[in-house]
Image 1 (tube, rainbow, N blue to C red):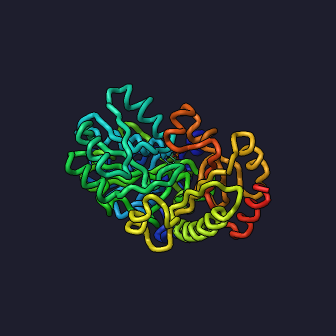
Image 2: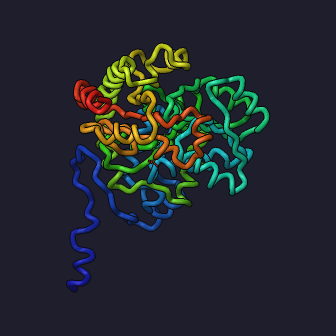
Image 3: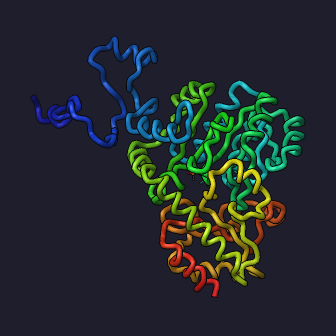
Length: 392
Ligand SMILES: *Cc1c(COP(=O)(O)O)cnc(C)c1O
């Protein structure tokens, strides 16, 4: 055989050993060959399970999808290249056979508002925002807008409101709408939207699930009714996560429950400490007994777990004071994103909600003295010590 031919074929396409590797390898292959054309034909026709092309299925992604689907008690999952494209896939699938109308929670991740306003609305989908913590108000909005889909976050960003997913799922079903829950802030440790009647659960894998700040990814977990349509759409559009990122996400998720338990415990300590600090005007935390959604939280979350996000307002601060406070942080990382092993702080008015006008922010309750803290797994006294020295 010629050297040019050997370079391409030698060593490749060997059958895997009879032994099973203890972790799923990173499959980089773009396509798969079969022993016979007949078998390839059956796989292309989806009469036989198997792999033929990486845009359709990939064994590394399949392992991650099975892992996340098990955590969420779903029917099936789709790993995507980002949380945003996961959200887009869920919305597109939900609206496929439904009215092209969305009722969305009025408190959403900034880019999710952008997705609705800059992608869905210009393509002819009507979008209406409504509060999801006031069920009567939501019912009225749904009656008027007659949506094909309701979109909400399990814990809203950055003010940490908690809607009653099970009751909202009933409102959606009565209206013939699908319910999509972005559960990124809650994670499957706190609640599992499909168990509460949602049709889709969506996560940014970038955050708590991967947890180490080294993966950008997303995932849609679907019920049985929508799973085939979701995969069909994905085979055409190709929003899929790369196998390297799939591997990293799966590796991260193995320790996610341990990390999250620790982060939740740390967040409680930090929130209590902040509430007692003279320079802190107000603390937003889901574990606060005076939280406006305390009854829903008690009903939906497991005892003692409230999430790892704490938002707070610095008394009398504007942008310059917040910049000075955040510049003084030594351990807590000044960065966008959340859910990592290290604590991180973000200034919503500058980052996640930058595109909104000051008046729109004010109406949402996002003031210029508000910061958002994602509490990590460090020793709690070191996180508190850093806040203490920076607050001065
Ligand atoms: C980060 C985030 C997203 C978007 O995820 P990406 O992985 O950045 O695309 C969506 N929703 C929420 C609540 C998020 O925090």
